[in-house]
Amino acid sequence: MTKATVAAIIAPDRANRSTVLLTRRAVSPFRGFWCLPGGHIDQGETALAAVIREVGEETGLAFSDPRFLCYIDEIFPQYSFHAVALAFCGTASGTLRLMPEEVEETGWFTIAEALAIPLAFNHEVILKQYAKLFEA
Image (cartoon, rainbow, N blue to C red; front, top):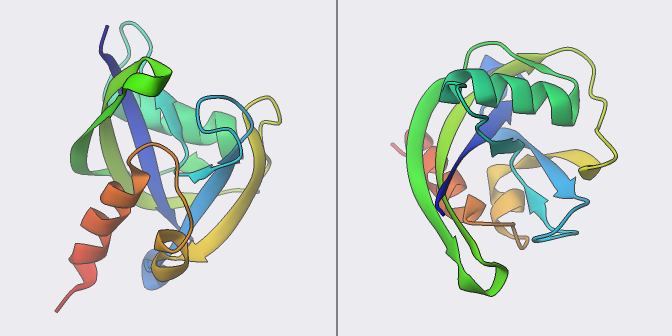
């Protein structure tokens, strides 16, 4: 069954939008890979509420100004995984604190750095869509 998920592109502030927060997954699929914070939309939950909740759960940050960016299909037969991911971008406030059951590590990366490492799911495609916002 196809799942609905959310992904958050979090910049440290409005002036540094070319830096983003990634988390290293502690769970399968893609254990050990870096990815955007996010996860599944719960029954009866809106996508906006889900992305705010997931950012808080995984990073301890408050995702205060999420804006819809794009959607991406994520189909990985080798993991029996099929989802439609809704990506949001914005900034967050608070103190980083990871959820060790799901996240091994967090880190700030420039978009170029993030695109140079193997990313989980189709998060590379989402980051490339985000990077288009800065092209002149």
